[in-house]
Image 1: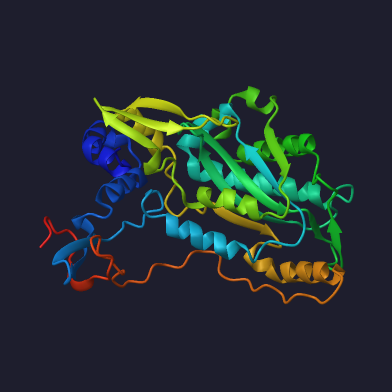
Image 2 (image 1 turned 90 degrees about the horizontal axis):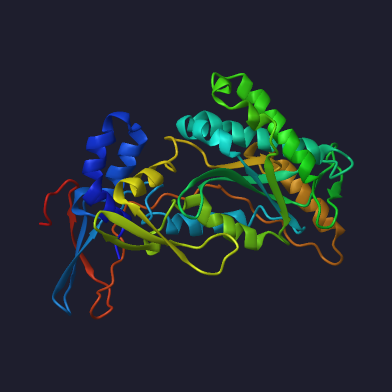
Length: 368
């Protein structure tokens, strides 16, 4: 079974030679980072086990957010930090999807279109939630951008995790959503489409979109998800996971790559075989613009509104019978950087901790 790095190492040079003049700089950077991740090119450390007389090299990770080798620890850290956001109420997951007719424009102008997708979907949901017929107050939202289908096709959409209720406009009361219902999805879909259309009309991209896009129904899905813990676990991999993980790669043979995927709603795996060139193209279309923020917080979840989150928690705790629980502490929402120190390495033969010997400088052609 191959790794993504091996595919890029073997077929990346030909891909760059063919398309390099048209490739985005961010795509070039991601390919190079994945190719060099945990190799002598990035440097690392040398360890030694006295008991087994065995040496082992530990090379640095590239830490690129699109590398499948570098994101597991970040996923676990993010998930742990989000527990402070959950409120003791039912939650909802809402998904806003861009229609097919917009995807060509979105793929070519990612920064602008993804920002509009976030802004207009959040505005539409908050506007309906403020309506006294539904929630009648300010809600909190955690949004995560997701751009791929299970076969690595291009499918941009945003997931939001939303507590089922909001703060009254004056901040003195909590207004609960109805059981199993947050806002009307049909009305939300129309409002989202109108807001996106009006925002896009102010840009040079509007004329690139077929007129039929504004007449078709847009897809917004809403689902009740109990207290939110399971949904956070569902969203966490999307926060840091890339379009495909190494464990889904089956083989690389005859200039073709085969990977495994499971269609939505199915319990059986399917297999997709693509030319190496097409495989790289599909992967790169999910590389985000440099510095793009794919996790966003709105309402009382936004960093500037945490005071209102504390108000909401206090109001909900006051409604509980018995002694009140201490308020959960909130913390930074971004994962901490890995400390710049040698990791602990265990000997693969005897299982004992190995001794650090020396640092390997980056860009070394061969291990010392």
